[in-house]
Image (spheres, rainbow, N blue to C red):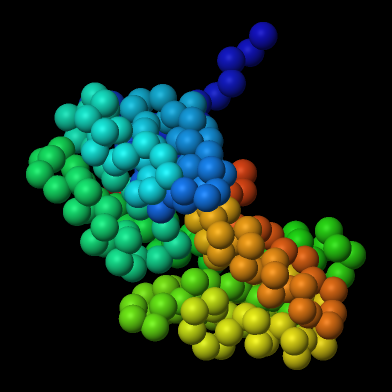
Length: 245
């Protein structure tokens, strides 16, 4: 039986054989799926990139970052914040939890990668086609968290929305905690809409708040759930790591 050819991307990581990778997400005390998603991605990355020792941790509701970091064998540890923007949690909370360990090197939050834009575009088109809708007659709603105190969540959501291809009738960045609010906009929709939850995992916002808002829509909608929970995210993670290294 012929041997499968090596993954061409994984060969980029061979020089990093003495390194480890640590994925850190927000987590949720109420939604165990938030950590389960991260652990599943870590296991898939460990299989895809056998040269790296891979761990996963969350800020709440699961294994703690410093405890997981202590168990990693690499002389260097690349920490990848599994967040959709480089806001407070990715740039302050995660580094603070790991302060004092000189092995640590920080990567950008996953959601900041330019690779995310075509990923979202393809996901939206697949949702529309699966529903039997022509993308050209369908609205795409990209729903982010938003924050009145930190513009970075809004900025990255708007940036990806602006870069999504012109396959859709319209592409609209919407938010849960700042305008334009998802809850207000869905009531005025006048054609079918696919909604992409721009969240890393299925916490309360992705699993509860967005579906509740979509229930008020006067048109048919299809929802992706948290985009970070999809299987296709592994390719996105590998690409982001390759760019980082």
